[in-house]
Amino acid sequence: MLPTAAATRLSALRPDAPPAPELSAQMQQQRAELADLIRRHAPREGNFETVIKSLFMVRHDQPTQSVPGLVQPALCIMAQGRKDVTLGGELFTYDPLNYLVLSVALPVSGKVIHATPEEPHLAMRLDIDPAEINALIAQAGPMSVPTRPSGRGMYVERIDSQLLDAVIRLIRLLDTPKDIPMLAPLITREILYRLLRGSEGYRLYEIAISNCQTHRVSQAIAWLNDHFHEPLRIEELAREVNLSVSTLHHRFKAVTAMSPLQYQKQLRLQEARRLMLAGGLEASAAGYRVGYESPSQFSREYSRLFGAPPLRDLARLRKSV
Image (cartoon, rainbow, N blue to C red):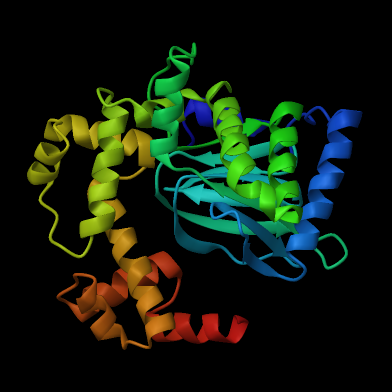
């Protein structure tokens, strides 16, 4: 069962809900231009880096299976298609009407649910550096960001013309590389500013404010990402981020939809999968590398997350590639 706020946020995206308002004529034009730009810089299926370091283009010509992965803080905007993202059992759907933001690194599963060769899934991703949020807040001063109880570190929000315009201007810079060093940082800051001023902007604001408990949770997440292969002692982690054990558990679950131990487990299993797929390690060696001492426990937990034991899962992945 989704929490009330999440259920409300997602209801407009469900097939049985009342239809959401369509894009205005101006925004339809913007969406069409965004689709053309992404198609040009993603000429085939895949994820494409650009010369703007934080900017990526994504294209899929057919629906995909649910794929677990660790996703860093980012803004995701879709020009065409529809995608489901699952966090700890909660479903978030985004499409050309709604953008997706991750304010902290989260282990999620993503599934493209509408795409064809004629009408591919087309999206862009802009990685978010929390340090840039911090610098922007410091420079801009009080921004009247709404204050609300801490929520998930991922949210969906209705897109608007101003944000679309800034994103399109950023992608257009790929055609004038000489302008990128000067203009890309300015447009990126504008995009971050507009995210902060959105109705859910407090989620980004909180990760940059040092005396906020959400910021301390983001520090705990960063620590786990750096030390996931080590035994987790929750008391030590709580001391590391200056929170009580009970507060850390409560706030961590509010942001990530899972406990620190569950978060660590997902990090371990996803890294083990990467080591086997890209590095050629055997399952027992990969499990040991990420912190598992029992091969049988590793295999059980791997199957639970990925739907099949390591050898069968890898065979399926290689076949799909």
